[in-house]
Length: 413
Image (cartoon, rainbow, N blue to C red; front, top):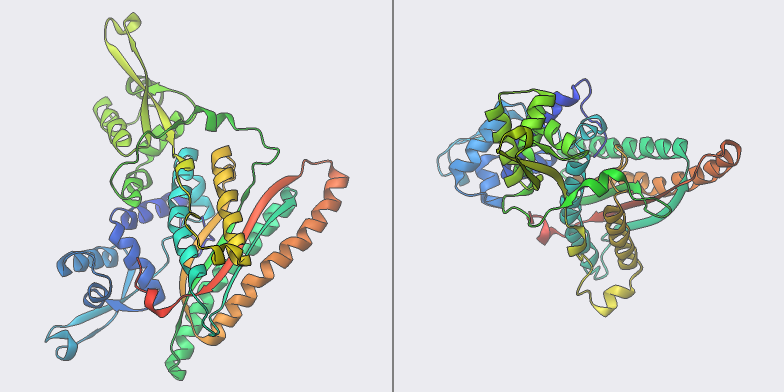
């Protein structure tokens, strides 16, 4: 979940738009990269691959047709383009979920999406922390802290994070304009924002108890498994109901209607193959007159199998930043296991790859660095409010990081 950057777009409409990007994993990389800089399909293929050039070009064309890419200009023929013409594009927006769109997803889907995202974030964060400084001014900061707030404090903190998140992209645009005049080389930066409820003092939710752990993860890329749920209200409705209770195809169709029973059956089977639902009890006889009725339940991901801190060197483990990384990984793992990580619709987890000039990067770092101080101040205000209101305190974890990536790792997918 991230701040809303595009205003006036209905949440369901945005889900449908996101489904277009998530339907092919390559499209996510295209949109993310082209939000940082302009590129042609040929240039993208030379730098990142993605299968054959025709496959990359086809996905550029589809993204442009759906409004995810904006045509800028063409170059050629001749030169490095070997006589061809290259069409250059920029992405119109990053492929993020805003708070309203994220809230439309069933709880079990949010849990799986959060784990999938953190499985991408943790290795990249670790990579940035492992880079040797070698006497350079390579900048990197990581702060992770447990905080106690009330509901007012939580919402103020999320508003502050959302505002800084949006400013990062504004700063990137300002930097792009400045370097057109200065000729300065842009800096690749990675930025982490995280805010979620900690499990301490929290009773495990009934919703989480009803979920069955996914026995095996499907081979298809997560984004491509998620796309059908983003695109279809009926699939989301099925998974939402299965978060609450066991249901069969017949029972769902009888209680909630929707397409014909064949269409509902097809969706149940697709959700099962995608790892979103699993078979539960099977009933035979009774009112079914000898027929067998298969029931299903929503699934949750197998969190405990992932160790993001394994095999670190002795010297790395002594570093303060690495200790913060270990604390973050353990806090995320505990919250996911306890079912608190996604208990709030407006929890925050983002990893942004951005490009700044030196001025923009310093501005970005200052903004990132202001968040822990703001939240610490809000914690003090929350203590006073809690005394007066008698409200139960909320234990939360916040993490903020900014890292200047090494040039030899910029092409990592």
